[in-house]
Length: 573
Image (tube, rainbow, N blue to C red; front, side, top):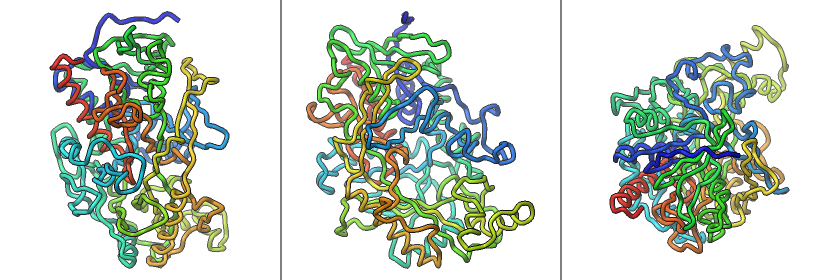
């Protein structure tokens, strides 16, 4: 295949336009650097009426919004999910790993839950507190200034709580709890379980003239047309494009990072998905922010004489220590909420309250805790089969007549709608060198690029964590005078533990550390082996605890961007 080469040389090439790529693009262009931003999917702006799904009623879909064309319903804003046409991946025989890809400008930030939690001091010192294999090479205090700047730039609501491992930030006013959340709070208090306002990146107060304020439509997963909830496309990339320092390459699949005879990166090669041709562009610096597994794939496919095992892989650790969040869930039916009064309590597109980990000092049979998230769609417009809601399931549960249409099904919807509370635990996974992704030597995608193969197993202590969460759900159901829907999952069902990858929080494939023999990047997310290549997605995570990774991805990427600017000024790159 002929490779079309560009004569222009950029200061920086950034691969991926999600959380990592978006903030890196903003910080580097604000400093005056010329950037090429490469995105595997098309251009996307949630304010574009042709692309917008926000506010569309269920009857605008021939399937009433069900999961046929998109995994979480027809209006869910992700181009792609655990399966992408022409882009397969594989797993070893005893592994069932689910890898989500969102192919569009802004990536997963168009549909994420907007949970903007910080890692705590214990999470960075995970060896000391949880007896894991390594601490991060940085501390909470190293990254705190970047968390603070993120809060102020992008916005996050919440309250100051002074908790030991859930640091406070600069918060906007949180929305009030909804009725079902008040039931949860009441039930949790009976067991001495703390419940606090959620910390979500949704604007409840104006922070600039470019973004609107949340109108409480409850549809954050559709991406916000007034930019009130954060997505990288609307809040970072689109504003940066107006400065004239970004060349945006959409529908472009990066094949590899190119290097010279000395093993130094010179740029990247990518496939234009529209015409199938391969292109090569040059830069002083290459930044990978394509997601932890995608960046690992690019590095492993970037083999050369100087880097025979893949770029930056002299340690053999690229792809290793893969982690996803440990999850398990349960729905609770609360009879007191049947036939409830209907009023507008849509709120934001996420829970207004949650439970941070509360048993820090208790000796348990698992080392890492979890937090509990609650449901939020209690009185939103019903989408058939979405959110676990099918009225006949309740009739069957109560031994009532199943079936019907017209007036009967309208009565059933009215009777049960809003009477359930979903509880979901999100817990820390144990970093394990035996959980990894690697290149599958026998399979390529439709662009001719070798794909990933996954190997992943939960540890016994992670099953114990899921069991503990299910026991807590049972206790909370009793406290709320509720009933757990369905049987409580036991050991034979692995306590309902999530399939690896299904929580969409994969981290850890290009581990950060001070020792080049036991890590891939240094404390500034720069490859130990190649001075002008950085990885700014979740790959460098040593450990993430029970926290959602997005806020830490961006804080680290901002810190790395400052480092790149400094190194370029010193002519070290």
